[in-house]
Length: 133
Image 1 (cartoon, rainbow, N blue to C red):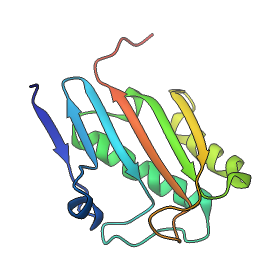
Image 2 (image 1 turned 180 degrees about the vertical axis):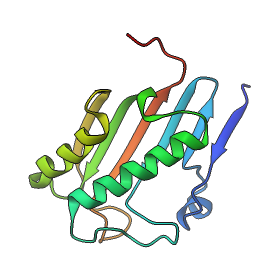
Image 3 (image 1 turned 90 degrees about the horizontal axis):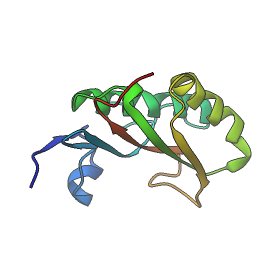
Image 4 (image 1 turned 60 degrees about the vertical axis):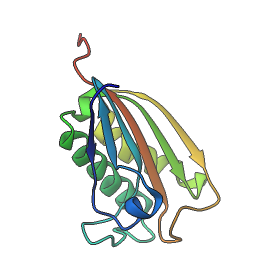
């Protein structure tokens, strides 16, 4: 089996559920559903979908970098939102990070996330050492 490089952000949910924030196997990187929490597990931007998206994507960026990847390596994102009517503010924040990268992306409305304060959760997949134009 190929070597796995794991990253834990230290949130309380990781050991309870039994997952890594990010995992790299060879050139493939998978970032688990990530939310707008700080180092202490506090939700940043309560009530503000744009602020939560920015914090979430900064957390995704940190996870990617911890296993040797970068935003430019992302090929897919999945955005889970609790209120699809706020798609534009969430989408614009996503665009600030991925404007020139343009990964495949999906936005899905869900009933709720793990905490009622959370409005946005993002998963990402990346491939390291891909050809660049």
